[in-house]
Image (cartoon, rainbow, N blue to C red; front, side):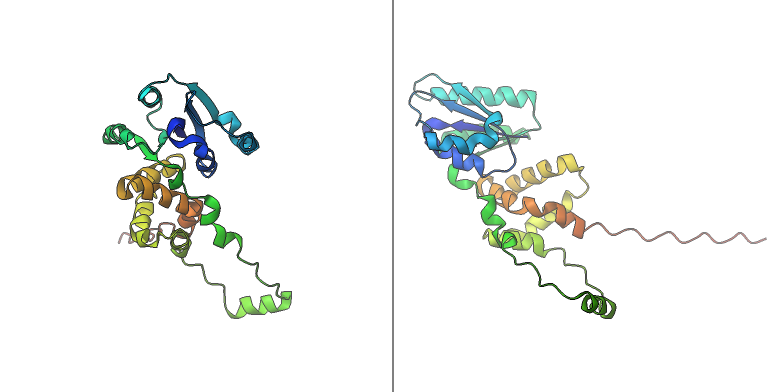
Length: 241
């Protein structure tokens, strides 16, 4: 599960757009003080889809007071669920020491800014607007299939296209290498392992952008690039009498 920790004294109400862009958000903890920017009423209807995932923590006012309370809650959560993914949403680079500390212990913790979360709609726009193929008469379809069987689609273009749409195509070779390495992972752990590998390879900001770009195509990638079956063993020769 991916859990967001929001420093509202730093990002104001910009966290709303950032969180709503992430389709995998599991929980959102909003840390606020009387100095935090109020959330406009017009934004409340947009939060309806994730309202049950929101919790609010009122913090003391003072220099770095909210930061210390956020860091304390993060450590508490990590102790209870070390396998979850933790995202600190803030522009305050002072959190980077906390991020580095947990990453060195193998915990998935990253810091991002509201601008780092790429909208999923922008990533998949090319797929969404692809026109449907023109209808072909049944008899013509039959003749076409009989004359030339439909070739299997290539494996790589799905991931490469998504990376290209996100202007991240230079990372394609490393991304496919990571996907292939995690092929044997169980379905419930695979996305988490891929996410961590991307963050470790490309860093927080670019790794998260790449993950959001390729995630919708991961299942199709594995379906199209299934590991080849081993050849059947040759039958043992019959014993001579």
